[in-house]
Length: 240
Image 1 (cartoon, rainbow, N blue to C red):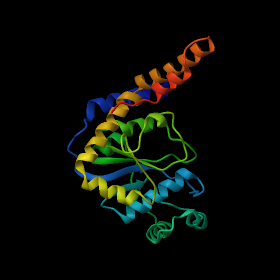
Image 2 (cartoon, one colour):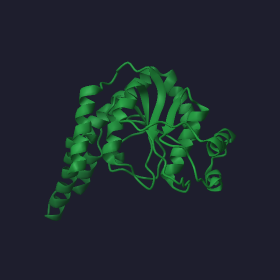
Image 3 (cartoon, rainbow, N blue to C red):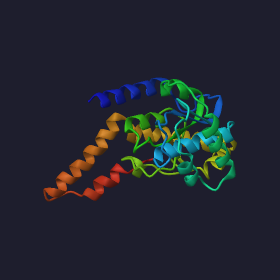
Image 4 (cartoon, rainbow, N blue to C red):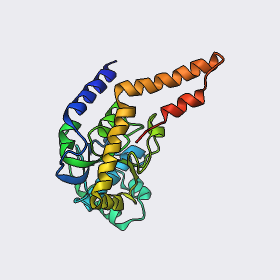
């Protein structure tokens, strides 16, 4: 119940504060968050965050990715074994291991993101990130860029690459950022669709309605009528 109330409060703040098409000065992809101590590169979430930080050091004019603390107590061998065959990324990973990376104090997402046109979504360490926390990023009127992840959220079936958001990994993130910066009209459409996706899928009211529809479909099916398939298809629908 507390989590739902917090979700509702965040939703109210979004509706009151952000509109799609706000003039935003920073044409960069933004992320702030934590990396667990000690860092474990075998954890998909931590590894994704470390790669994003390295990419931000490589392309500071396209990415603004910072952690809340420096990287310490790290097994470099595990990380470099997972590193892509990119000399540039490996060079910046080694720099992080040696001198740390850009850090930033924790602050509310809604305060940080106001000036940025694009936001980055990365799964948390140890598994899926919190749905309510994810939802905030879709509602701020910015383009949502999702870092490749193994974790599947309940709303992923309704999300569509290049329609509601952009999927990236360490190899595609750099050219994707270049394209975003070059094509303002496309970026504006993606930001609009991200907000529509939020309104149709991720508000507290719509999320609970979609789950209720699916559960009602199961109930009807097990009582001799209805179609679970039909209920699930509405759950995964997004109208841009």
